[in-house]
Length: 194
Ligand code: HEC
Ligand code: HEC
Ligand code: HEC
Ligand code: HEC
Image (cartoon, rainbow, N blue to C red; front, side, top):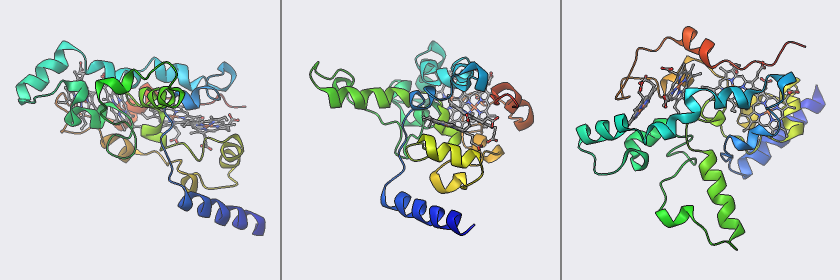
């Protein structure tokens, strides 16, 4: 028990000294896409959430933007991105100049930033689970799973109805009444009981 307290205190110190960052859904894929463990990535990819950014390129979206009198395309409008991307306005997805998306061939760092930003398009893992740069390490994930440390101290959030209604509310131009119990069944991706 004493040892656990020390670990928690140490972790809290580490986290306070380094901002927790969004890594993008591709940063979860390598460990959460095995069939035997529930293939969360594949399940998510087949869900509407994984395509929320593409939705902003639809005719329907253009019409909504026009009706609202917005000057920008939907996929560049903060009014839409706040719910159709991951962590917008909160250290996650950001609007960038056209040139950002096409770094020079030798610009490896640039390519990396682009990859991260693309991983933050749409409603990714971290929209619900929280920014993952700290908890995504294998040893921390295992400790959280074994209840040795509280996920919340490393950025892994407790998910409830509140998590969803940040986006599923009347501010959505296409709002459909949101039923938490029913909706959770649609997006569920459990690990098979061992
Ligand atoms: C960051 C914003 C955001 C959060 C958080 C969020 N959603 Fe969504 N959700 C969306 C968007 C945007 C869509 C529509 C995507 C599309 O169709 O392109 C959507 C679609 C859905 C759909 C599909 C609706 C349909 O008509 O098929 C379900 C089900 C759903 N969400 C459930 C949930 C649940 C349950 C939670 C919480 C555990 C949640 N969502 C959290 C933004 C969010
Ligand atoms: C407050 C969060 C929120 C904002 C802001 C938001 N959306 Fe959405 N959007 C959602 C959710 C949640 C859904 C899933 C269905 C629903 O409840 O509306 C969705 C679904 C959609 C769909 C698919 C609708 C369908 O069923 O075919 C389109 C198109 C869309 N949004 C366009 C936009 C555009 C364009 C903007 C910006 C003007 C925008 N959204 C802003 C949350 C939001
Ligand atoms: C719309 C919200 C939402 C999104 C997006 C989402 N999850 Fe989840 N996830 C949940 C909920 C709700 C649970 C149920 C457990 C809980 O309440 O914390 C869960 C549970 C899990 C679990 C634990 C399963 C278990 O049985 O213990 C893993 C692992 C997981 N998610 C990984 C992911 C990964 C990886 C992604 C992205 C590819 C992702 N999730 C995207 C809402 C979400
Ligand atoms: C280096 C591998 C690795 C990466 C990367 C990783 N995880 Fe995990 N995660 C694990 C392991 C291991 C577990 C423990 C369960 C198991 O054995 O699969 C776990 C457990 C979880 C759980 C369940 C925790 C609990 O006790 O309720 C969630 C939720 C989760 N991961 C989400 C994510 C999300 C979201 C990302 C991306 C930001 C991510 N993970 C990245 C390895 C990883």
